[in-house]
Length: 108
Image (tube, rainbow, N blue to C red; front, side, top):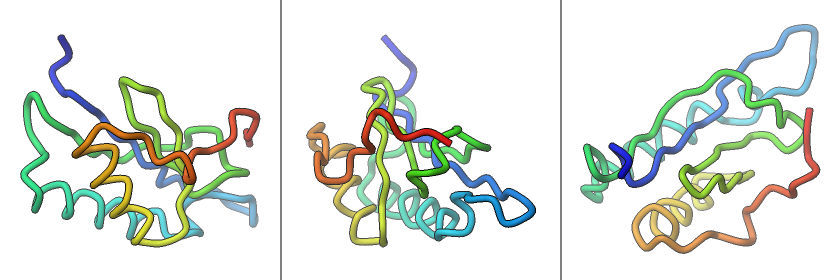
């Protein structure tokens, strides 16, 4: 059994020279919002959920992105309502939010 039931990583990478990156698309605000919502819902802690920052996850073309393990579900999101849906559906209820899933072939 894993220490956490689910582990969420948000790409917060900032690229230079105008290259596409999650940081340019509200990734920090989404991370902060996810962590606050999960905390308010009592989802954080050992045996529950961990929300972490990450550097480049190499899926820049689909950014901003986050990934939820152990399911290895990659999400792209547009706004904080999308983050609310991920928290409620996936983190709380264990149901993947299919409409926000990142296509498997999206890379850098």
